[in-house]
Image 1 (cartoon, rainbow, N blue to C red):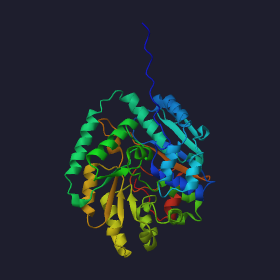
Image 2 (spheres, rainbow, N blue to C red):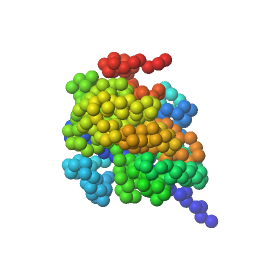
Image 3 (cartoon, helix red, strand yellow):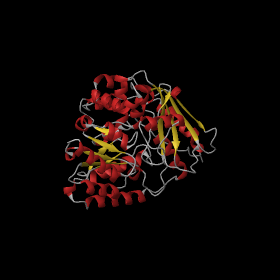
Length: 404
């Protein structure tokens, strides 16, 4: 009897559109304003005790496959249909492909059981690496540690979330979006979850950050800016203290009122509110929360709008930090009638299948040869390769030193 051949698994990333929209919107800003910027990114697994070294060769194989992908004509036509993407940028994407020389994956020299992923090169040619690399690491980890996992538990949990949303008073205008590409259990489960939400709760499902799944399933792609954009401006702006306002001004010049949600926590909320003056309050459609207590953040932002003579009811507060469905509903009730709210749910949507998700990130650590950093309102989220620079950044922005 002839031995059966082992079944070959499909590669994880099937399309260059399998990424978050904000990577493309930031990439357009890079093309038009900072085409010569050089950057470095570093990978970190924040979950203790996770050994990713058995996946090293599989990660490298997936990256080799990733570097063969190109945007198809259909994908480029879809991107041209998005009002905020400009024709020259889409033309550039028609020429784009990942270059393997800009990424290195190996065992961490100083930390047994950990892996070191470093991305270094032109920002324009490295910016798209983050999302697919994280999705690859996450899916390979679960393929190895939870092979053949029965997804019935994930489906049961998803049905419970849908049932919870259906009980919400329609007057609340509760809307959630998917922000879960980076730490999903698998691409297949990710798309199944999206299709379920579209079918079962269309009035409450606003869309997805994943451009490929948006295109394939007739969903709205969502996203504006990420922390790397704000961080890079530390090395690109005229003065470090003005880097946050420089980032907002540059964004506004590029999008002329579109994509108007400002990211609020690169330097902590205090520094954001100091810089987000009446001009920015009126210019931007709202702000996004991604660290710290969401209720305190919302209360302070509403009060800030009032102080600047802006009707908070005309602005959108976007919440995206470690949300669950019950927490999102509670936040929506708190601010109902006081501001518009929107919710981006990530891991709790795309990796809630009965096993613990891993908290993995890739963060920019350098731009144009100098360190950059995010100073988070949440313990453990601050990431910087140079403690002296981090201390200087805190001093420049008048931030309190971290609690010990």
